Image 1 (cartoon, helix red, strand yellow):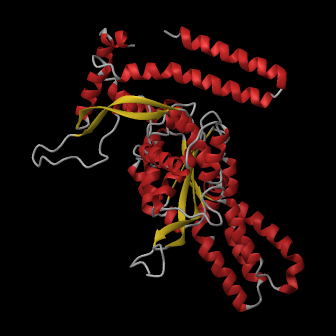
Image 2 (cartoon, one colour):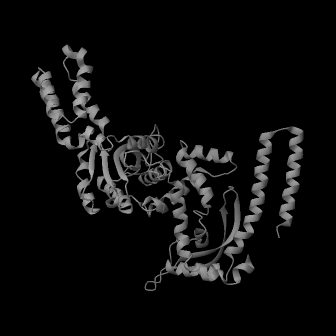
Image 3 (cartoon, rainbow, N blue to C red):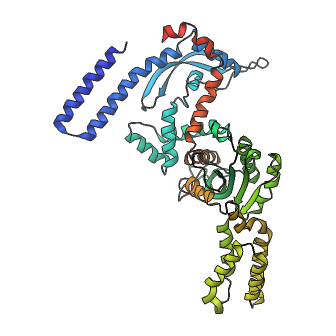
Length: 476
């Protein structure tokens, strides 16, 4: 059945080769070959897809059984279009399912409540194949804007407008986030024997777009909106060996949320429950001195049945706060400021806080400056002594810094979501934080595979017995 398309492909390739021999335009040759092969792929894939969707003796029966599980019913075939990995559009006839009306109220399902369930089983999102969706989403989260992503796709021969790209990001992200905390894991992530789990936490900022309240002013065409700064909280989970070295074969975990501190710890709990930190060799938390983080860790560990864990306040943050005290040193001693600061850093590293406080108290002759310096010391250092035993941490191969989360904030948030003239709705910001986190930590293919497999796994409960019937094979 494929003899004619193959012969047409051969004839077209010969014409392209002949044309190249005369014009020597290699760029044109590559584009012509790409378009020709894409046309051939379309001709090959369309009948295969259509035969499966129209197979009433096997595939459709299994779909109806799956739909019944979901509270849906078959409403006939509808013509629609799908996009495959080449970016081309195929027009097909697909089984349509909608929500079954309630037996009590007998109300009609609202418009838009139906779906092409067969396409979802095959991994299509918004009628876009998983491979094309992955390509589009990666460009959308890496390019500086959706508009630029569309231009890059155009160069690949894929024509998608900005709204379609945004809609695809939103749909894919929301579906993946329904299983947030689980969908990012592969099976080999779960064995934590002899592994140190390092959890770092910090916050970034972006502008949130909110519609103004009240009536629209008569002189304006639009309601208008505010663009206040909001904090996004980000977590990283890394896996270290007994020597405190990063295990590179296990990708880290990144995620972030615009929610409040309680939402953030709920998100962290989802990931840790999947990991089972009680089975790990050691669990280490590293962050800045924000009290809202540290005071919630014991409660979280109690929920996870972890009795022993370690807390380390980021050494760089500690040095920065120590430098703020050094900047208060009187001008008469300014020439010795760096020498004093280096001495203080040495005391800080070895955890000699009593000596550090005494030195600060002796150095300042002005009562006002002394009071300010000691207040800074007492507020920041005195309450975090146990988290600043850096020489002891180093001796036991425990981390002393949260550079991983600092880097993640820059890459996940600052390079895409934060910038001049960039405003996000809360919904879209949450989606983009999740998608960029999964891609940049190296778990993109895991998330994509788990999402595609989720619906298919339910369907395969009904499909095996159907493949033994002759109906599908005759249709195919």
